[in-house]
Image (cartoon, rainbow, N blue to C red; front, side, top):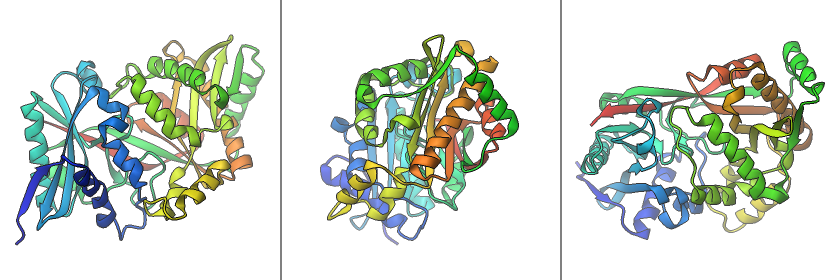
Length: 383
């Protein structure tokens, strides 16, 4: 029986082995989407990921006979340590993520090493998988393995759930994504709410202006921080992160797919929709060479996609308990739905992730007749 050795990721070659491993483990999974290797390397390279400006990270590889057979990230988000404990993080809470392994024994060795590292850093509790920022890929896929994830959502092997739970972890929070047939008009009740909003002179739903990218991003960020401040898992985005996210997302930002709602001239809500980039990169098998870059550039000029994803939506706190909040949400969803179908040829939307206890957003998703299509779980245990 091969001996498994664990070691920290220290070199560029180590990081390459870390990124390459899933390509072998998922080679027979038709629903796994190979990430662009350059992007995947950037996420674990401190100089290329603004999240590292407030995080401490150690990556580990498991090897047998010099071949990578598992990987994991142990990390501490220093801003998360400052959050109230009732919001999921707080003092003493570290995380692990980016976990992949050939079998349960390898996984257990990696998890124990990640936990040991977190204890060495003074952590008393671990949450995972969170890969790596809460704004990236939180949670383990536990339902919805039968279709590919959309852009910025994770995939996993079904057996991972049992491995994690047998290691003593319990579910802390469940996250849902919702599937929606956007070729169908919304129910009559929603249409009436939208018409009422259109007749209200106080309300304006506008497209963003990509030529004023930084200014528009600042407006959205201000609403986001206000709207999400009390949410479970909230960690404020920092300027380095915003810069890096802007660089990555700008190519798939289109004016008619991102809306800002104004009330009496003041921005109070937003909705971000992205064409599913995974549809374009899946055939590239992780590489832009030799012709992948040209195919991707052509797609980005005016993407035609089946799926649109809504990763973020927010309404300022002062309106969240009012009817106005849902009205603004329905109006933004409807205007983006129309553009998605008419301009981009899309036929389905995916909304989320949405926290299990976010009754406001879950009610909106249900009212427009969307259905849960994927379930993710964040686990935790005392160290």
